[in-house]
View 1: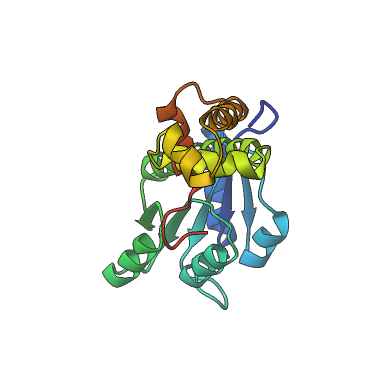
View 2 (view 1 turned 45 degrees about the vertical axis):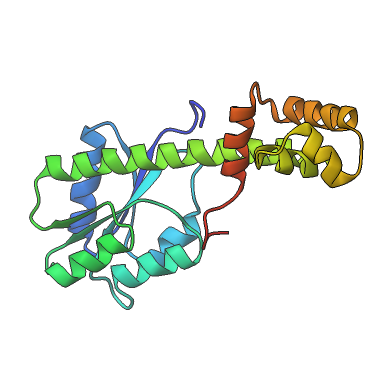
Length: 209
């Protein structure tokens, strides 16, 4: 994120009065806001470069806010969502939270409760973007390794010694030391422990791609 990418809050609610009220509140709090009457309008907007979050009404014309939450997740649009509703119930709240919603506020809610939830959501998105940026840089470094350097790196982080790796790959220990040194330098790892952490970050958890 740069200075040109300040946080932005998106609001999707078919009630013009609610949209206007939230926009006024956020403006008074120094936050940028864009409001939409329908989810499709928000989708056409596209994701910004800076941190963002979505204030989403549960009851919308056509598909519900919960359906739209699932649609966003299926499309890989990872944005923190704060649900607002005048007709909340416990099962609905549980479903929203289990699907990753930040907060579920029932109208009428306190302005401060909404602002607190928005700041938490923006902080979460900011942290997620920083993690993704760091991971993208790691992937770029890893892509710069030769096939043999990647092979050696994998065996090194698995705990094997240079001598064992040399035996495994049918080469000399000095050759392994050279490949290992190149991998450490290209990955910008200052220690074996750091290289192990990098390798762990590059491998997605089970069930994720």
